[in-house]
Length: 237
Image 1: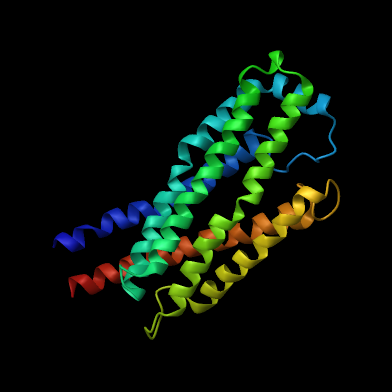
Image 2: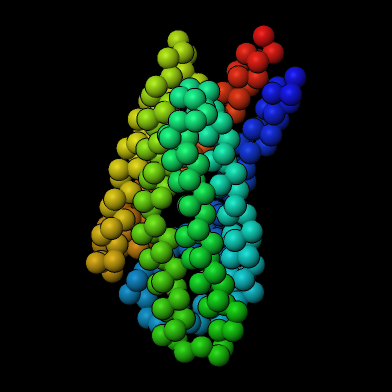
C-alpha cells in the first residue's frame, strides 16, 4: 500500500503544470504586459514610462511569476515518474527530462527578476537602462529554449518506447513534443531582427513558437493524469 499511496503525490505534482501555465499567462503575460510583447523598436522613453506608470502592476506580476515558476519543475517530476514506468526509473531519459524541466525554471526566475528590477525604482533609472532590462529579460527567456528542448526530446523518446496496446501517452503526442523541441531553434534568429516574423513580437518567434508549446503542455498534462490513474489501478491489482 505504500507504493499506492505515492500516486496522490504524483497527481499533485502533475497539477502543478496547469497552475504554472495559468499564473504565467495571467501575471507574467497579461499583468506584466508581455502578451503580446512590445515591439523591439519601441522607443526607450515609451518602455520607461510603462515601467514608471505601471510599477506596482509589474511588481505584482513578476513576484507571482517568480513564486510559481517552481511549479514547472514539480510538473516535470510527475512526467518523470510516468516515464519511469515505461523506460525504467534509472533510465537516462528520465534524468534528462527532469533536469530539462528543472533548468527551465532558471531562465524564468532570472528573466522575471530583470523585469522586477526595472519596476523596483523606475523613477531613479534612465530610460535606456529600463529598456536594457526589458530587452535583457526577453533575450534570456527566449534564447534559453535549449533546456526545455532537452525535456521535450527526452519525454518524446521515452513515450515512443511504450509497448502497451494502449500507450500511457499517445505516440502522436510524443512525436509532436519532439517536433516542438526542434521548432524552438527558430528562437536563435530573434536577436538579429527587430521587425518581422523573427522579431520578439513576430508571428513565428512569439505567436507560433509559444502557441505550439501551449498546446503540448496541457495535452501532456491530461495524459499524465490519465496515466497516473491507470498505473494506480494496475498497482491495486
